[in-house]
Image: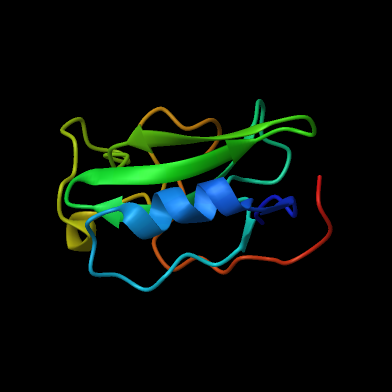
Length: 111
C-alpha cells in the first residue's frame, strides 16, 4: 500500500513544471505520495520527467520543494535511463521498499 498523503502544488511550482522542456501531459495540481505506507522522512510524488531526470515534489506538513532525481535501479546496481527497463518506479535513494511500475495509488487526505 502507498502512503495516503497528498499535496496541492502552488502557482510557482506549477509554473516551474510548465516551463520544463518536456512533451508530456501537464502536471496535476494535486499529487499523492508514491512511497510505501509508513515511510520515513518527507513525502514524494513524481511531477515531471525530462530525459533521464525526474522532477519530484517532496513535502512535509510545513514545506514543499521540487528536486531532480534519476530512476531507482531497483534490485540492480546501474542507474536506469529508460522507464521500460524499470524494476522500481521511484527515485534513486528513496526510503522503504521498491515500488513496481504501475502500482495503484490511493487517494486520501493531506498529511
